[in-house]
Amino acid sequence: MESQNPQTSENLDSNPTSLSRDNLVHKVKSNLVFRSKWAELNGAMGDLGTYIPIVLALTLAKDLNLGTTLIFTGVYNMLTGAIYGIPLPVQPMKSIAAVAISDGPDFNIPEIMAAGICTGAILLVLGATGLMQLVYKLIPLSVVRGIQLSQGLAFAMTAVKYIRKVQDFSKSKSKENRHWVGLDGLILAIVCACFIIVINGAGKERNERETSNVDDEERNMRSKRIKKTMANIPSAFIVFLLGVVLAFIRKPAVVKDIKFGPSSMEVVQFTSHAWKQGFIKGTIPQLPLSILNSVIAVCKLSSDLFPGKELSATSVSITVGLMNLVGCWFGAIPCCHGAGGLAGQYKFGGRSGGCVAILGAAELVLGLVLGTSLVRILDWFPVGILGVLLLFAGIELAMTCRDTNSKGECFVMLICTAVSLVGSSAAPGFVCGMVVHLLLKLRLHLFN
Image (cartoon, rainbow, N blue to C red; front, side, top):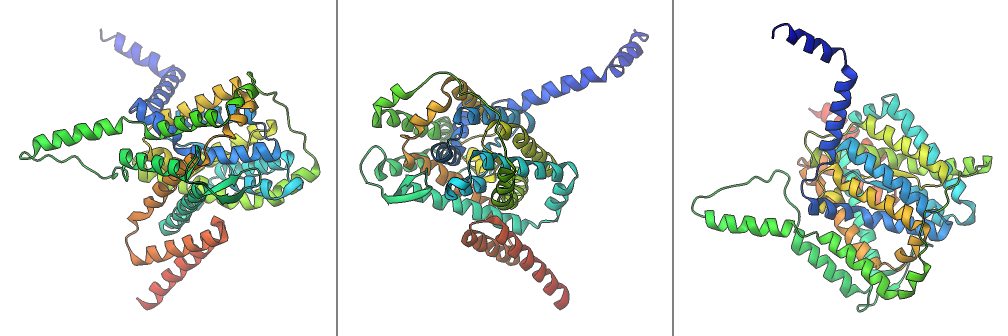
């Protein structure tokens, strides 16, 4: 027996590849494990209020290949869930999409994809060289909170606009006031919002602890049973499913427009003009948003929501870069991560990488089975319901800032938030927040 132990140890040591492979498989499985299948399914709906409007707008306005986009974002989401183990969804790059919709015929698919590739390349370099991690460590928490608060409020205000006004996504414009009654009316949106509030409430406190009181044991048990029952109701999924049903009721003929099979995938043809316009009009305004919201704010929020699972700014920057350096060549929408998407999926019950893996698998299947014809259904999906989902995602992101305690930190955070909201970008808010933070530090040094 004693002679076998060294032999066994020697065999294990001589095959580290087998051990590392087993560890990798175990990690992937643990990252994709479901805390609750209904909760994870419900959480997967938390980012659709952002994803669908942007993808739909670019499909209608710029003839984006929706089938290709669904396939690539589906694969991205499944890989993200397996790698990170938290509900970190893949989102379209908002600034590039906004430029494409507002800039008319001068900014089309080649320019959009060139902007995504350039942005991805820069993020990859920043991550691979370690500069992104350095930036993450140097930015004060109060400035990060300001970025999160501004993004959350921006989502919430956009959501209210979706609920109150009829939307023309192809032109990124709001039209007349929405009617109270109808299959996409105000009453429908209000009822859906009330349903989610009743089921989900304001959300569970992250430091909430279970308490036991001997005198109230029976009442506590009854309360726990009610909470457990409510937690198993997938409110966001039910609301989204209602929207799909209403889309077919609003336009029954949409069934005839559905064509089965994936869309044809082609390599995008670039010109020097496309590279130039894509970098100047797309990459330059998108880069600050990607660095601040897609990397810095995401990493901080991950540590808030999932203690012990804080993401590395280096890793997130590299994965965002790789996504765009692969998919954009084939016409898939430029993608990133976002603190709003993470907050939204957490709000509705997402707690593991399985949450985004479910979403990714659904996107992949839809991309392969329906392709671009899916846009006919999405075009009739009630926009008010999308607004409701986006509203709760924005509020959840904004509420992460409630741990800002000192008056100085609140001062910096609110200045950063105000400038970001007025400037419609995180970059000016970030600059102002950093300047105010440094001035307060200088004042403290001079007068103390």
